Length: 213
Image (cartoon, rainbow, N blue to C red):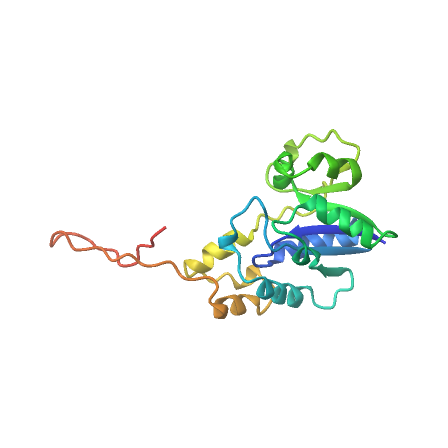
């Protein structure tokens, strides 16, 4: 099988993840898209991560019974922090009859030089780049790398969703049905504290809804 590896913390999963994966599965010739749910990205702070079992629970519900989507937790059993080169090499050993292509956004492509042994990834694996903002300026000069020009450009991120929820915004339509409520009820994202300001003069206007950044 030809398998596309879509890595991410999915913290939380949102409709952008699913729309991109759906497009790639149906239009780019993949037999399956594997959601490689990572316990920790070496380039990101672990403090921002929700519980991994909860993230897996949300992702499982989001994927549903679509037979071209598979959830892969192989990195949970590997030394931390996890590195993509190690994961891809292990997958190739475990599934020798399958071919794997790494799927990353154009924003990640811009920083791939910071990845561990990125030269080995480019030498030994195919890489598909899906478009994000500014992707029309991408320069590709490697035979194993291709740009998925027609994929939908969806400017949505888990970071934006977490920040919105912490500020009391209702972003239920950014996520598959029912998942927004689960995140709210989980308590993993706490609302920002409202800072109370002291009245300085009788003419002062005090905004009790000021949000501490």
